Length: 311
Image (cartoon, rainbow, N blue to C red; front, side, top):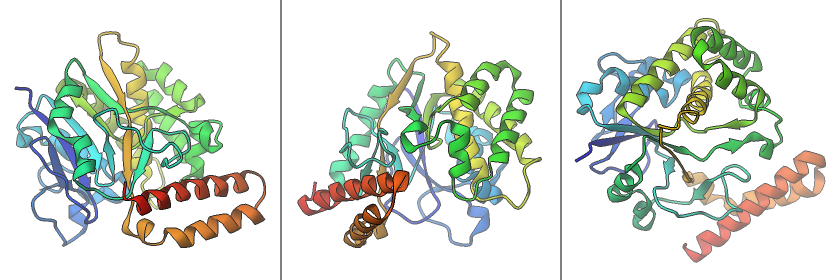
């Protein structure tokens, strides 16, 4: 039987999902004295746990890469987050209730038994039959008003667009075999989100070597005070470049799936107040801002209906 491990990273306490395949791992353990029971930690052996504020969930990927024998040398390995999961069947959420406009990542208010049916081990095994790599369906950042991935990166919280340029420069120098794919990302608007994937063992080793060779080299030239998720965001671009390369190889079998984004307690607790705020701002704002508030109001209306009906 094929051995599969998909790691679900936890930085904060949340509903734990666990099965023979789904394996919870706590990230940033070197930065806290609070450790969650019943899961792996990213601070043993060769690790970058202490750099979790920069690398985010990638500290889990790094730990698995460098400690692969400790997880049983599985045939397939993957990564999700405590609030972001692959949907391993054909379920589609409400198109008006997406994490990003026109994306395939759908809001889900809470984790219950009905939801977990989309993540059961049998479905995962079925998806990996005749498959080498699973990723979320690609996203076009033009849907959120950016002309390119570079421009969108510059809009992210506490991110400096100069870091994107440094990343691209390093990637071209460190991995020249990926030059066409790097330029495709640099000039284009399509990317693969969330640092989420499932790969066979050989591809995972190739990707991790590519990813951390680029990121750790870029890390040396990016200002030391810019640590807020910088490498985590740039890691999404590494995944995009790598998948662009894989898609040119007709022998590599790739599947692109929908995904879910689990709401936080606050997002569930205060939706009515936010709905009024979005309604007000959509009336007094202009241009692109007005359209953004109208879209948020529309999404929240779908959420309120979902919570009211309990489905």
